[in-house]
Image (cartoon, rainbow, N blue to C red; front, side, top):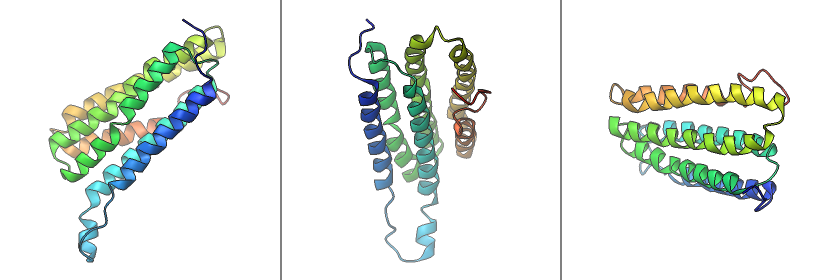
Length: 196
């Protein structure tokens, strides 16, 4: 069924609100240390590192989501529900961030964190395909879509690898996540186009 359910701008506004709440929840996990000594603040470094990476990751998803929905012509069932699935997966990041920080970067916590980063990355694919289906007659977008898909597959592999890598060393999970963030830092990276 291809008829419009709601306007793209309304869905984007809803998504922006959910993403803002996700970021706010992560901020609330940053607690002031109970002791006034600098060592007490420094002891919170695992929480700050995981917060920084998660904030950066959610911000990149927001930027790419905005660019994707700028191209969306109408919201049908496919666009609506794939967007809701993506937001659900993205909403797991604050939990994984808090868990990683509070567990002091144990291997299992890092593996959970890597899995929770992989889920929205996977969920972005059907959402992108639902929007791309509306642009299938535009040859310029088809080329960009192909290159964007390659970037997506590379990030899937890196996030998936970050899960078992946590049992080699938890830092490897963060390194791989930072690499994915670097790949997505610019939405046009690897696309070779300025207008899509």
